[in-house]
Amino acid sequence: MFADNTLTPREAVRLCALGTIARGPRRYSDLAASVRHFVTRITGPSLDLLGSSMELLRFEGLVEPLSGEGMEDDAVLAITEGGRAEFLRLMTANLRASSDLSRLVTALKFRFMDLLPPESQAMQAELLLETAETELVRLRDLRGASSAEGALMLEWLDQEINEAERRQAWLEALADRAAATV
Image (tube, rainbow, N blue to C red; front, side):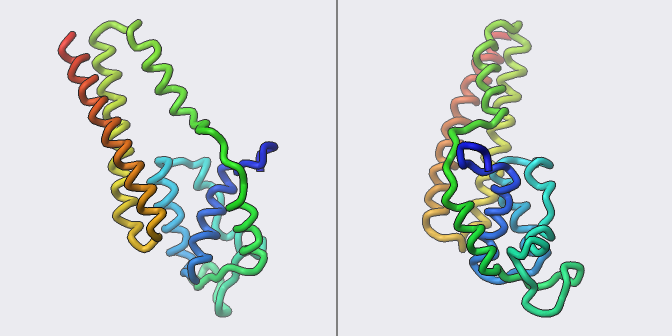
């Protein structure tokens, strides 16, 4: 954890894996795919987040195969008592205000966009719109795959999708205005 008791990227992925398997035993391949799908739908592809191996969970005693199978046999894994304790520790960590670097870069683009020539402004507006469209696709895909995750998760996703749709509409209008000045 960071000094302010917030999760590192590795711990966030660990929380995703432990929470997923705490709902019930899963095959190793299903767990890895589920974690990868969820994390990339929230953050986009990130080697920083997905670089850690699910096999570390077994090595650290947080999950265990239900039968004598090994990870190479696509074992069915269950959470251990130590895994439940780690899940609770991670789940109760503090939250940090959004610190995503892409959020800073986006703010800087808006702050200084007026310093660009009109053609470059139009290109940047289109780039920002494409990014918003990609985010919306990821959220909708996650919503479609999360029907069994419970009402709170679905409510949160609906709110995120509504916000992303509003952002996309605003960026479409911005892109139209920028294109009209070229």
